[in-house]
Image (tube, one colour):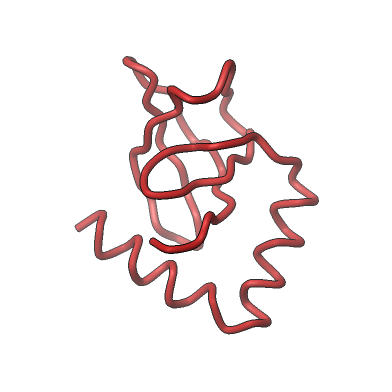
Length: 84
């Protein structure tokens, strides 16, 4: 994963971990760099770490720009490969 990508937190797990969903890909990531994370939050994800919380609007806008630029599919393919 070369770019940070918005992801939706679907579960908060023990040991500063969370499950996120992005484009149909479900992945367990570290949220240790964030103070608080809750189900329904959007986070900016990079190499398995949630770096920042962002708003739903910012997440949607970023995902739309990535899709428009042809970057989203490649990132999701790479993330799906990491999750396998």
